[in-house]
Each structure stands twice: as structure tokens, then as C-alpha cells.
Image (tube, rainbow, N blue to C red):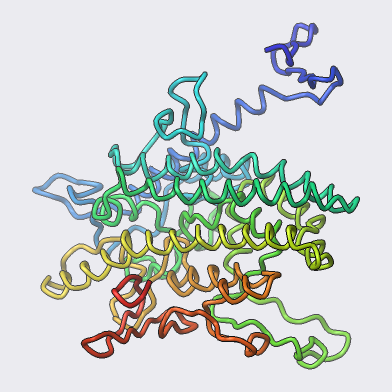
Length: 472
């Protein structure tokens, strides 16, 4: 590599990186990077051992078994993880700045390898997983689609940082060009996401893979009403509750939102009207109370450097403000709205995928469970969804699944600049600011994510699913 030179100090732990223009671009600590990669492998092993231990089932034919053939787990789950597992596991997680649970970073970002080093990393044909829970092709494919999306979307980061710098000097042409490239790449990510259907079967995902990704939050039905205790030998351990793996833990996706100025509110909270100010609802001199926000909470499940990077980007992001202050520049406004449209389309495709892989399979499981005895093993894939039909289906991250996804999708279009773009992108419940035109909403879509479809045969409900002849 012509752009790299090794220091002649006799040390193999550092590598000097020289830019193409000959100037020093800094030093990479190879030893630290290698140790973090090794630690991430240990973390996955700790996640695996913890999941297997907590899912201990009854003896089968007199032999103690950890998992049954269908990866189903008994109601009497073990709530305590022994020191032999928890002590090294907690130490590795502290080093990686991650909670002791299966995270997006642990199972995706640090859990792959390139098959051929001279071929691109954003090609699914050139990727392989390092470790899986089930050993199935479906599980590997599920992780690798996310890896490929991260690799394909990575160039967007320097691209949009360049756009931020261009906006500071009022270079609208460069900002517009960057937004065009951003929209094109988002469209590619949507196409890549849909490749999930090729090698990941919904039944295998829901019943064999998803149980391992569930956290310890909202798992009372699985025998973990208080969460999990990691025994560290101190005698002062307390219960811990963590959400499981979620794509909301992708720092790349959250980067897209920050760059485009997309704000996400707590699930179920509507957008305040422009006539309502903080001073109207809060006493003078007091800040509004902090509210739970799942998107922001998911940053605590990201590696520390990723969290800090997003915080820095939040402080310098200026694209939305720049476009709003240059509304007369039609090319700039259209390019910005195109990015919102592509990001919203990506979230629409994700909702459809969640419907196929989780919603439909959840209903099949509920129907099947009615015919089973009370002592039948509980599948962790659906344990945190509640036994009642009225309970909201929850994702492995712990949030109300479909209401959260639909609200995040609808919020994506809110910063749209052009009037026509606002009409096309606002398909959620109309708010006070948009009463001047008819929102092109899906028929009967409510704020909580429930659907009421009117068809030729009358009215029928789709409480937490997607699809239907009259829906799309």
C-alpha cells in the first residue's frame, strides 16, 4: 500500500498512516484495535453462554439439557448468572463500553469477515459470520444483510460531513450534490435490505433465531419478572434489565436522522402544534421534564465511540436549517426532500419485513398456543409479547413494535421543505400545521399503529400488521 508506511522504531504495535498528499494523518494503534476485536469475540461467547444458561430446561429422559430441539424454553428460567460466566463477561463489556446483552454491534458489526480480501465488503457474496447461536444459514444471512448495509452506507458519513462544511460557507451547489448522492445511496440500501428474503426463512427467524436476541426487559412471561442478576462475587448484585438486539442500535441509521434533522418523539406522543410553546406548558425558568425516547435510549447500546460521534454530529449538523433558509433554491429543496423520501421508503420496507417475519409468525404462534397445555414450553420469541390479544407486540429491543416503527416512519417526512413533498410524505394522522391540505394517509391508520381497513366485504381490523388489498 503506497499510502502507508511502518514506523522504524522496532515496535509492531503502532502503524503510521500517511495521507496521499504526504502529510501525517495520525497513528493507528494496531494492538488496541486487535484487542478490541478479540474482546468482541469474547463478548459474543459471553452472550451465548448467558443465553444458554438462562434458558436451562427440564431434564430430558434423565439427561440434563440446556436447549430442546426446537430451541424452546421453560417458564422456570434461571435468573442468576454464575460468576464463572458473569465476571469475564462483565469485564469485556466494560472494556467495549457495551451492556451485557446481545447488541447490534456484538452480533453484526463485529461478527463478520470478508471471504476474499480484495473484493468489496458491501457484497453479501463476500461476507461470512464468525459466530452464530444456531449454526444456520438463516441466522448468518440475517446478520450479514445488516453488515452489507453498514458497508454500503458508510461512504455517506464523510459525504455528509463534507456537506455540513459546505453549508457553513454557503456553497449550495456542493450541498445539493451531496444530497443527490445521499438519496441515491439510500435507495441502494433499500434494495439491499430486501435481499433478506433470499436466505432467511420467517419461521426459522421467529422460532430459532429471535429467542437469542431477546433481552431481559418485559420478560416476566418467560420467568424473568425482575431481569437478571450477574453474580460477581461481591454479594451486592442487583437485578438488571436490558433490551435485546435492535436495528435501532445502528449508529449509521441514527446518523441519517441527525443529518436530515429528523426528530423522533416517545412512542405515542404526537407532534406539538406551532402555537404551543414551552412557556405555555412549563413554569418559567424550568426546563421541560425529560421523557422516555426509545431511539435515544438505544444509543446506550452502541459502542462508546459511536455514541460520542453521534453527539458531536448533533452539535454541528446544519443541513436542515440551511435548506430551510434557502427555500427559494428549488434544486436544493428537492434534493433534501428526496433524501427524506428515500429514508422513509427504507423504513416502509422495514415495516413490511417486520410484518412478515414477526407479526404473521406471532399470530400463528398465538393460534397454535391455544391448543396446547399450560405446561408447554414458552418460546422466548413471543414471551415478551404477552398472552393477551390486547397487549402490544414488542420488539427484542423492548418497545411496542409496530406503533414505534410507524411513528418513526411518519416522523421521517416531517422536515420536508416543498409543499408537495409534505403532502406525499405526511401519511400519519394530520396535525394542526397541515390542515390546509389533505394528508395522503393509509386508510384508517391510527396513531397507535392499529389499522382499520374498509374493503368490499365490509370493515375488518389489522391491529398490528401490514398488508391487505386496500392497504398499500
